[in-house]
Image (cartoon, rainbow, N blue to C red):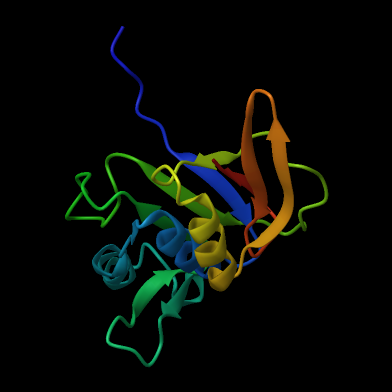
Length: 155
């Protein structure tokens, strides 16, 4: 069987703010869909109200989808026509309801050995919070939450 391509999808209230956080947290690149969006707007296949200006007033200003953002591993290929990643990526979609319960799926981040506390501090500076520190016979890690409360672990 041929391996199946996949992406992890994260529900969010603010996809673009979450994309900024996760791009910085993972060292990933924010996907740039500007060319695709402009092409679809020109063809009448997308409407202006489906878009937002991302990073307004900066050198990185561009159009983005109102309800969707994504980040991708910087070494993985991307589709030049769409700006979408073709490898490891996190797709972030707007949903109307707030997060109410613990995630059933989460990311485990594995910084270099001996750097966990420095990484936790760096992630806190990006807007994450420490939920608890775990130290068990099977291992130790820090459980954190991203700016919208989605749990992830730093090992």
